[in-house]
Length: 214
Image (cartoon, rainbow, N blue to C red):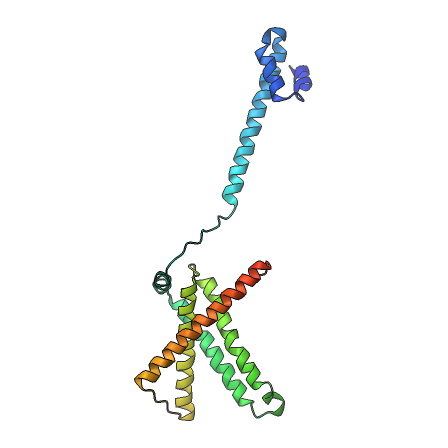
């Protein structure tokens, strides 16, 4: 059988099957060698199929994006809201207020005064982008309206903390009537929507150029 095995090992599957179909023309050793090689071929095919299935299972499956209403996205975000996410917003708010005070403390310095307002303008989007990055890490359902609510919460905390600080430290007083308060809230909502819309557009551009997204 060994001699036939070495002679038949380069034959195709059809040639080996032809030997079995015409067994009268071949010796028993040749027939056994053909059977053995066909079995090896079957095992090889099965192993390749199993390897392909295993490789497919190892590959991360891409989640299908389904269209979800704004109300559902907001409900999902609020339902999964945790203390950790609140502390993230609180930390970013304290960071913003602290940096603001540092800038105002050195605002009278000649070398620092020229970059004060440009730095303040840059600081706000930086804080919101950091919130956006942390949102993607902490929230599994990374939805547009969920991010809008998160940005709104952050903006609310920033304003409340700043007003509280101004009242306690500097003795400032803030008076709002009902309509002014509604106007402020609507402006905050609009700012959150516009910011997240801009981030979405930037992410689309980054995606087109195969760059890391925000």
